[in-house]
Image 1 (cartoon, helix red, strand yellow):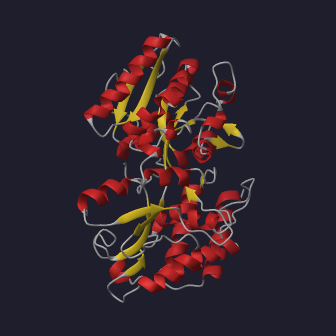
Image 2 (tube, rainbow, N blue to C red):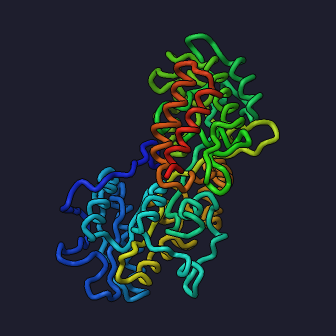
Image 3 (cartoon, one colour):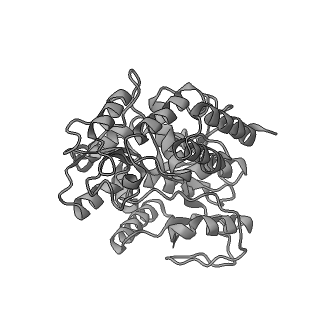
Length: 417
């Protein structure tokens, strides 16, 4: 599985020329969508992780071309360079017709008028059944009630636990704290790895807030709410767990893999790593513990696929989006990208549904919540929430006061004129 820890922030356009490696790169003199406005489109994708995966994606594209009399000029770009190149291309009007797009970037691109609104295509004769997608992943494409893409792949996080230390995983926050006190051995065994720092901590925090009955913003996304009671209780839970998780243990190399930690929250990319690197580790995966009487929630990660407003061939571009995210191709795309399929029926495939660990992530995905679809949410995530959590968990600042101040700052960033 792909390591989703490093979500790419929104990058400003910093260059006026584009050097693209891949197959079928557009000539510099042509608009990336077909100069004649015919059935020729350009598609930008992340460079696949292996030749096998690249061949698989090329085969899908060939199939779409043949079935629809469309030429797709595909450019593969390393993920670390993707946003910079994309923003540079947008700045000079040489963007593709279709591309991958990291989920939290959709609101900004939609606000800027860069993306094509897709409701008329999604609900038209060549449309889709919106109910067949995982809700959390689908919602990452909806901004102010309008659709600007489809989910291409998705992932989420769940609870890993050491079965030798914790035979039965905690289901509630009270269970988790009781377990923490029971397994703790000073400077030797810790209860929980922690949420880390910065943007990663802030990306994990919504799983705690929602599992405590709260939300990051209100229902119509007009006010930040993560500093209210549920958010404060979630932060206090972290401090309760940290009490039984010495920093020296948490910071030791491969602490969970080496059996020094009872629990950690992470994604499915860890499964093979633990199996391959720590064959003696007896671990399991469970839903994230929740407050008593509240359902377990998690968060969403992954990538979407979008069409650009200036495409000369929007119907052909939409067709490719629909084709790659269809039930028939969702599993293949998930294999190529290293995440989970976005179609509910595709996720019922035995390779996911009958695997003791992956099946838990699928169950967790059913209640995974999309990040707020607000243009400056990444700034709030990385600079405001991440900083507040560090102050609470590392510096011992009061959770209510610190999150309250962070919420006020978030509202200023998100909603001030």
